[in-house]
Image 1 (cartoon, one colour):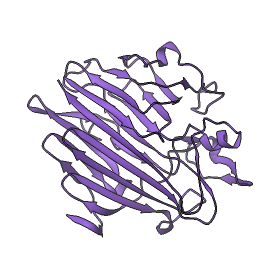
Image 2 (cartoon, rainbow, N blue to C red):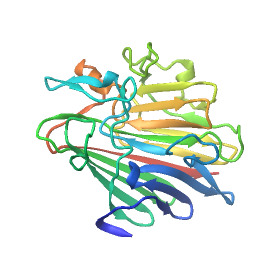
Image 3 (tube, helix red, strand yellow):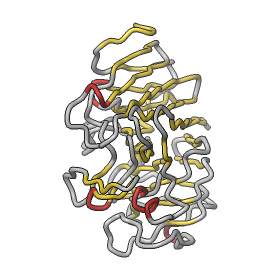
Image 4 (cartoon, helix red, strand yellow):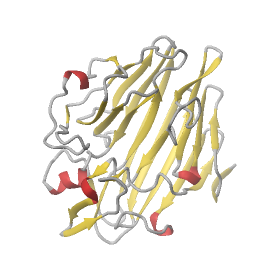
Length: 308
């Protein structure tokens, strides 16, 4: 164990005998499993990556220094035209999820790591930045803290988010899972490319989880929501497990990804999809922060597990 020093490691497990979280600082500070002990068994709140037929490389990852997509990897900021490299049609999910992070604090229940883009080659972002990420388990609560600092001499656009996947069932294949969260609207996606095609609109019936309802696997969704209030819940009533979200005010957006798979994702984020271009267009809902030299964007995302 270390506290204050920097070490190079691979998988680290936080375990308090009720919650168990496995992370890999050497690979993006990614989470590879998150489970709760209930009814004499460990139940996979997040699916264990690569196990049981799960086709995920990780159970959760961090999106830094922006969340989700930037259309064609191109945007304008500060009078400059920026072109990012991109592996798909759009630059996606930031540039830290496959890079090593340095461990600064490690105990049985807490880990804090740091990433500095100036120490890495070919970072796909024109401004130097650093980030700190922390996971801590305390009783039935998992708390994640994330900080992003502009290490350059000029202002930079900034955002980030968490991308946790959740198991569709915990104890029985096909068991129901219920989802509830409050948002003001959903960005339309007229071109089916996850890029907002207009201002956020009231949720359509199949997108509306404000009062809570079952999340069905045949209801495909990949939506970005605005006006997220920072709360919400995921409930597996047969298994007697509920997860409650508690996010700080910086997380003004929520992305819901619901494929016909044994998992789904509920992602608290600070910026909208294509947020930097929405910012350039003067859209007040972009969620993109403008950090001056040395300034920091910080947020907290807690998940509280309730057992029935």
